[in-house]
Amino acid sequence: MKPAATQLAPAIRDLGSPELLALPTKAEMVRIQELRPLGLAEVTNLAEVNNPNLKAIASQVDQAKSNLRAQLALWYPTLSVQAATLPGYTYGKSSADFAGGGSSQTNIAKRAVAAGALLEYALINPQRVPLVAAARDQYERAKYGYLVSLRELRLQAAQAYFDLQQSDDEVRIGQESVRASLVSLRDARARFQAGVATKLEVLQAETQLARDQQLLANSLAAQSIARRSLAALLDLPFGVTPTAKEPARVLGVWNASLSESIVAAYSFREELDQAILDISISNSQANAALGGVQPILKIFTGADYAQFNGGQGNQSSQTSPVSGDQYTNSYGLKFSWSIFDGGAAAAQFRKSKQQAQEGRYKFSQRRDQIRQEVETSFYELQKNNRNIITTSREVISARESLRLARLRFQAGVTTQREVVDTQRDLTQAEVRYSSSISDYNKRLVEISRRTGLNQVSGCAVQSLSAVKPAGVSDVPVDPTPLIPACRAAAPGAVF
Image 1 (spheres, one colour):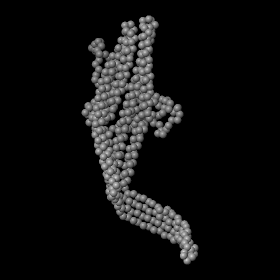
Image 2 (cartoon, rainbow, N blue to C red):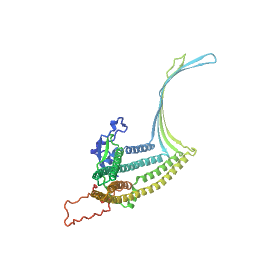
Image 3 (spheres, helix red, strand yellow):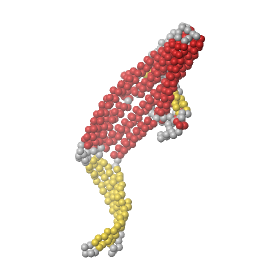
Image 4 (cartoon, rainbow, N blue to C red):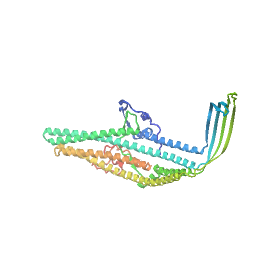
């Protein structure tokens, strides 16, 4: 798998994400000041570098690594230093009355320093191995989670870009429909003023113009939403809105069979590896729970040092100073065994084992889901491939029907109603054609994401020779559309 990009390409280096805790406080800070055209490769690059969710998941990997390092510390000795008095001072007086009538008063003045160090190492710790194993599995699971998130992010970025391309196409279709409706309305009014058309035909043309204007308004709103959705995914600067630099086109053809795609998905999907690691983590936690009621043996060595001076005396004699120091060293073994804990460890062991069994069920469920996802993407891809073929034919037929309807209307052999209906059919056909290309591309990148395969053959650039071949008849022959989606395109499509 190609690793995530760590820096932006030179052409888009100025589109770095804002500061993490930055928050706009003025309207000027969020006002759109630039429309930046972006290609699909640039969108992917921006998503990998800027997306905050991917950065947060990368932080989770670092957290799991730190947790593993913390658990590995169980294999190392521990050294602790403590000081009871560093230093400590004692001042005071004490007095006493005796039975014979006498009394005594004692003055106290002492200063002491006491410190010690203790070095311990667990020779036997039943919890150490399972805790380290669980932390290691959690670290591996976090890394798999990062890979899953990276693939999902690439898929989301591509699909958001395809949505933007489709919204651009719908805006273009809406603009063309409005222009066509204006022409039809102009012709209808001219014929009405000439007395060869009725008011009904003018009203029908005005109605179609209103429909097309509504279509254009909806398309413009969808375009703005698609742009800002992509900007949020890419975490662009506040004043930048992305636009699609590349027109909508068929990306390629999926070459792998359904069975090959399913088998590849089973060996590729990190979700299955995560499920297996969850089972292993639960088993390690079960062993750690049992380790809580097993014997623990530690070896230790310690050193203590104390120093003091000062003393005490009564009123009749002057206080005589007393000073000294003391150093001790000790070593030995420590043994502890929690023989009975009320059954808590055994209950925790059963709980972890039950979680491991639950993980096996989830693995089986996820395995079935992966096959279903691949099959759904594969069949949807085939459906959208056929839709490109049928909708391209529909666009060709609708364009010719509209041309003939206008000629018939200008010749006075038909009504404005036929022109309006054929124009509406053309608009709907072009919208369906654009949607079929967008859906096909989405399913193509989706099945690539779900299988891990890169079995996509790019579409060859279609070009025609400028020289007419010799011996070719001048009689026009209708071309037969080919089955591959790359060539099943309506005239005017860009490849």
